[in-house]
Length: 59
Length: 264
Image 1 (cartoon, rainbow over the protein chains, first blue to last red):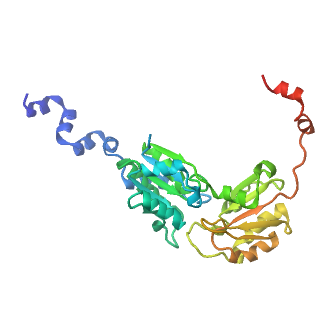
Image 2 (image 1 turned 180 degrees about the vertical axis):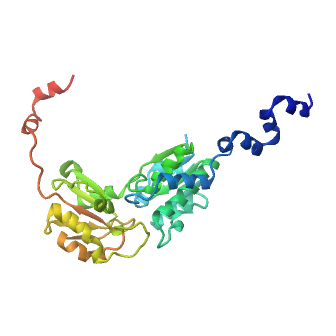
Image 3 (image 1 turned 90 degrees about the vertical axis):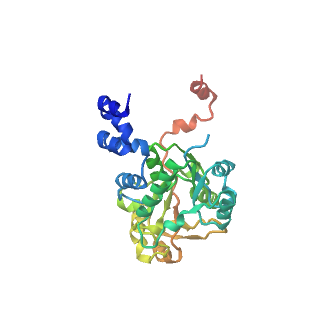
């Protein structure tokens, strides 16, 4: 089977495998991309800022 | 087994570094550290290539919380990409360390496998410096600013350790000593339970060499504070032994028949 035939018959999942992670992200949403690539330093800091908002004390 | 992120306590000085912590750090691809003792820092440099000194993240006039966000994000990210990573900190890693709490939470959230290795803490050093046995006097341990924010009852029949009295009422990092006014609220809080004439101890536990110890009444504590520097701990001893709750329990402690009832 030619690649072009496969794309036309296998639907978006196969197309995603051909077109790479950016297209997959558009189909499956950012969570899928995150699971593949792991967290970024910015996403970890963002989580920490939400989880450790200024509270009673800092040690 | 070595984990992706290894949080280790170095104790207060080189002699406190455990063989376990030394072995774990030797297996890490990169080590971050936070320690002021030159001997301990040299020890880390001798055993790992180009370790990162986290004190470079601290800036006078900057919130400690902001500093910890940046450090914890950097370390968890690094551990997720290039494990194993070591973080070696002063004292014990989970005693009075918001940074450690962030590392634990960040690792859990992002699936970074983590282990914690204990170290000798300031609490350990204070207990040996002043001969304090919590089995005898019981022990309350509080962070100074928290005592001003929350109305946690203080027990005058138990010992009381107050940490971070030199950083009272601010999150902003500084190494400057306190003004006499700074401790006034804390002294008022303690006086309400212990009385102005109650004798307390203020002390600094240093990484290397002897720290200092000051003894005086609560009435004199605030005015003495400017000579204490930024890092000191206060110990407030009990005013008197606790009231007896159940004399029968005390009476039966040496009774063999009592022992027979307690075991199978």
